[in-house]
Image 1: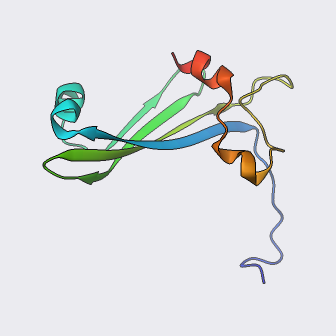
Image 2: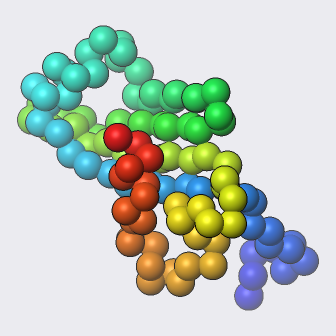
Length: 102
């Protein structure tokens, strides 16, 4: 049973990656204190690339963060935009992504 049985799915032409990591509280403070006490940072580049960073959990010892990176698909040879990848391949980050964000 589908939640919305009459809805049609459509893949939008965007490359989207999601991940998470944990930092020691002192490291987090050193790196992110300049951004204030917000639980969410959101940056947009002129080419419509978006990077969002959210604090998921914060203790006196560590901070758990999650990130989402998205941008419009570039062309048919765009290896970061993979709309037909298998669900099992969701954890395989394309090497070109790392070149793109460095």
